[in-house]
Amino acid sequence: MKNYFLLLLFLSTFGVSYTQEESKAKTLVIGQFDRPEERYAIEVAVTDLFSKNGIPAVPSLNVIKQGANPSILATDSIQELLRNMGITTIAIVNVRGYDRRFKISEKETALSEALGRTSIYHVYREEVTSVSFEFIFFKDNKMYFRDILKCRNVGDRDSVIKRIRKKLPKRISKKWPKN
Image (cartoon, rainbow, N blue to C red):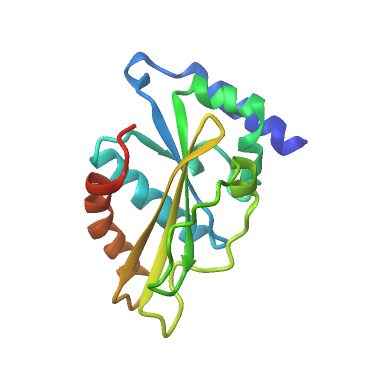
């Protein structure tokens, strides 16, 4: 309850400083990783790539405290505060696995269910040469797009981030719907 109150206070304070130039719809990027350094690295990289490709984005680290449960973002009151901040879309990024054969799931996933998941994978694992990232987009608490980005020939965490920075802009321009 204390975390919920602090988040509500932070969001309302952030909403007061909201200016006219920030009125374009934004995407909240949530990295589902256990390690804070991995979450930070992925959220910053994806937010930067989204912004460079015409998708205004904000990392979740600017909205919820580190270590806070992201499932509170599915509540109606927090959703209203996010809309007041100009955030209309939520993008969840996680590692689907270390194989190249993953296919995009056709199953509809609720926002609360997706936010409640925990990650069992890390951005990089020894003796792995391929990492598959899943991107799930929600608007109005409904999933509207899902995609998988496969990063091959990786040797460490930095090379994974480098591959994401190289491959994601091409994927955005070719396959992703325009907001």
